[in-house]
Image (cartoon, rainbow, N blue to C red; front, side, top):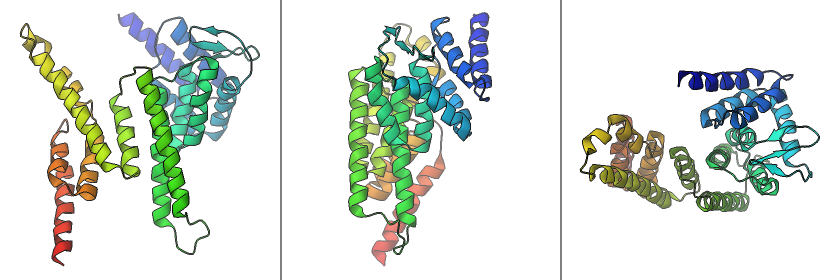
Length: 309
């Protein structure tokens, strides 16, 4: 068992080491493919995100990675699929979903939702389907784009030539909302269970779009599902106490991340003025985080002060 873990660790270290150099970047993608096909290891989300951060911080590396991966993704060769990978005849590079997700992760961090949309659309033409990481990074790109637009709109001066018109903002929001729906449909169609990170990115998007009520419903549903799983485990009379360990309990509660509960709690208080529900979200964090309730109390106090004045 130790040898297997060490072997996977060596693969991951090699991928990240080779990714730091222009001359060996191509090889890092080859190693990632070999990791999947030869050993059967599935590149983790953490590995993909770390790979993406390395090339994302160096524009030369990033452009080279784009050329390697997207050049193959958009090629018109008709090479047949082999184990969910498409081999580019000219480059000899296996076009694996993990490699594409590295690029999607960079796009997600930069808020390039139009680019992630084109990549997701192109996957079908290569016989590939988006997985949970593909959806995660694509949703992240939408959320970061909306956040960037929100900050830009709030900082624009009326006399600026770059002022965004309400119609432009609405059009952009409509595009983001439609793309989000398409991603969630792909998630459901592939029967991929939403991870806590996917739920978080979806909630972020809903809050940016002003759909706070929907965001609360999404989080309430996720919490309910977590509670039902917990109840189901508890109802198993045989060896129930042995099965429910603190680690398993923590994993169930982490179906909704603390940062998601923080986000929806503050939005519920500030936008919906539902302080009871906001406090409920604050109480569901995996560990006590009093600063969330303090923020809710401040929002409530400010509202009462405004009413009084």
